[in-house]
Length: 235
Image (cartoon, rainbow, N blue to C red; front, side):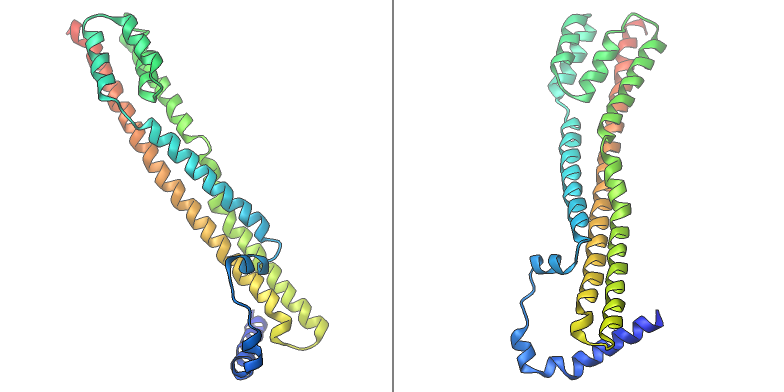
């Protein structure tokens, strides 16, 4: 590590004393853009780009699914309540079947068991609730995996860049900015890319988990209301 710091300091001194004061070098400097940075990051940028695309895909896909699951039609809930209070089980079941939401599926499972012991009804509703939460959790583990491995992939790029620097020095037998610039680019770009992808995946994972928690609470609240409702006539 000390040797690497000495090399880095030598590069900085060289750039400060020579490169930045040479108009010819300044004239040749290429403008940096995103594509140029990605290309300078080396081969490790390929898996990092794939990880970034997967992160966006899973985050958007889960967001749309969870947001759709969190919507409640108040007319649906009031209609279900009216049907149950009036003993109209078949229309209630049909309404649940034709409504594609987790709450409709949960209530439909419970309505089909009305008339059986209350414990059996509660068990059916709880099982359906767990199944709906499992559906929302699907693919969330991929975001967690990406959040963990993206920084590691960036670190692999860091090691690759350092190896390239020392290899160049061993071949050229001299420390020069041209000789080690490629390794430094690869080291810094891959480290930054891996961290950014990991941070983005981690943020998406936690925000989506919070959304799932709210849906879970909503399902539990409606399940409790449903159990209370079907017990009202016998109270």
